[in-house]
Image (cartoon, rainbow, N blue to C red):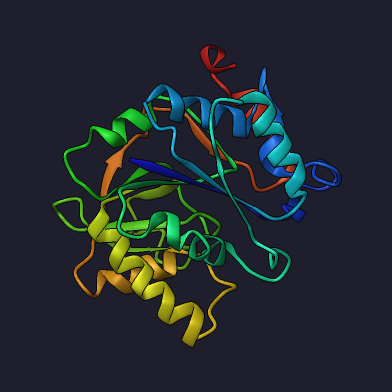
Length: 243
């Protein structure tokens, strides 16, 4: 299995914390977000890792090369990071991802390392980690059927109907990534939808019978860092064993 970490964004809502530092290198407890993510991937036998960079790219490259000299990272530079969203960063990983089993991770998540083996060992080949909590307008919300199959995944679906929030970590089979990148080709190359969330591609291929199933990880800590307030909350809420 391969892993893709998306780390190109400017994180403007986290300023001034990100004035001179990419979001993934912000430190919570004893480690930065990116170090935590890479450590858990390696500990689960995943050494084939692509990292999409953009904002302050060289800092990320230098950090990873210094901390993990035995790992040959695939660095993919998104030179349009100022004007595109994460769907475009994902599209840039086509050669690395298409036709392979992958884990896709957003780089701005502080999460319990046990989420990764929980997803890897989950019986469904295509799955996303899900956190059940009270929902508002900001979260990427998930609506499922009675079998746990994802029918809708977006910020705009109804909080009243949604079962929870997507954590931002997905497991994809080789067949799923083939379907996903075929859809991304249509969206990016023909429709120029390069400034939307990648979940729009997930929603489009649901209509072509390509589904995720939820892996409920509510009992395992996770928090996304979008704002300065999120960062402050993460420092307070992080369990002692993860510090």
